[in-house]
Amino acid sequence: MRRLRPLLMLSVFLAAAPALAQRADLPPPETVIEVLDNHPAVKAAAARVEAARASRDMLARGPHEVTVEGGYVRRSVDYEGEFDEFDVSITRPFRLPGKAALDRKAGALEIEVAENRMADVRHQVALDLSGLWHDWLTAASLYRIDLETVRWLEAELSSLQRRVALRDASELEVDQAMAALAQAEAQAAASLAAREEARVTLSASFPEIPLPPEPPELVLPESPPQGLEALRELVIEHSHEIRAAAREAERLGVVSRRVGADRFADPSFGVRMFSERSGMEKGAGVVVSVPLGGGHRRAAADMASAEANAARLELENVMRSVTAVADADLSNARTRLKAWQRAQAAAQSAAEAVGRTERGYQLGQIDLADLLYARRLANDARRAEIMARSDASRALLKIQIDAHTIWSPDEDGDH
Image (cartoon, rainbow, N blue to C red; front, side, top):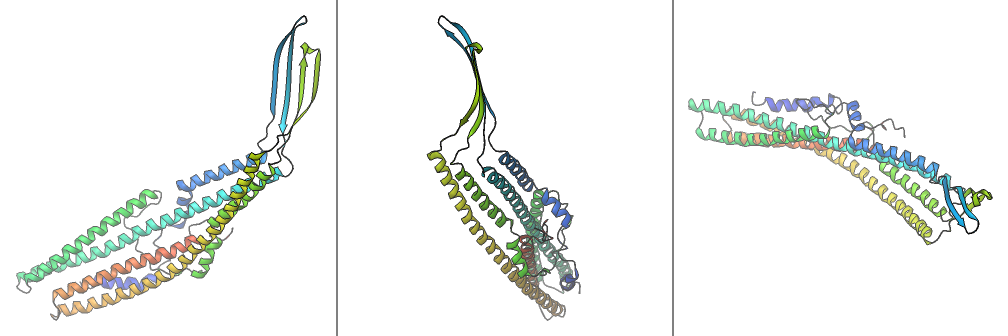
């Protein structure tokens, strides 16, 4: 029974795990949300939102400013003497009707673009966290299994060595056990290295998340309560990438209209005052200037129109890309979940086979080589179950992250 204990523990765990809270192996949601909000990439994107707000204010006020121009001349006239003369003009361009409204609309859309891009950056950081976290959990679970195998082989080798001393076992069996132990130790060492590498990578990438000394066990995958089909629809509906592309296409459309309106240049109005011949002649008047647009303005309008058309086509491309991601998320979640269920059944069958082989070995009906082979098959099956469980958990979490139903300020569905 001592040899069966690790496999029986696995069976008990597989049977009891559905009672555990869903995704109990993930860090607390409030911790994750705070970490994501304060991630450097997200804060950089937030700074770009502030830049967009400043740009909105600039557009609302317009580029035109008051211009003060003046000059002073001391003129000398033969037989008349010297005279002080000066002139001053104050002018300001004014946007033609409709241009200011287009500028304000473009500024508001620029903020929406920046906000959605910030949300998309946050979403990508959440996916990065999910990947690194699962790497750590998976490597730790594999190491636990390999360590159990090492400890069982150590105990078996010790038992065989005592039996050899009593002439109840052969040296060949000791050699077989030592070879199996060496192989198991090598695999455990590789698993430990993978676990530590995953830990330091996760810790360096997200230092704000406190990592427990021993990582939690991967919980059993379960379909989310919303249903996978509903999550697939939410992936598209809640996509910040689509929203950013849509707002950018709309913004560039407004900019195109604004640049087209600039083919009719803004006039400048002002006043001019002058004094000539040391004040003997004075005057004041109104000045008006209107730039005459040419080929440059026409080319600028053509370029803005082309950029707006490109943005509309890019929106269509983004929509296709996000739809493909949603379909892939749905397919991957379904197939990975089924693959894990089959791997789970295989691990249970392998555990039962080892139990029967163990009893046969104790009764002297099966030799050590067959037992070691059965143990190796069972260990491989348990490792395959861990990998399949990890893949299914990753896929299920990814579709939830993409649908913004977890680790997201949008979880309440208010958009």
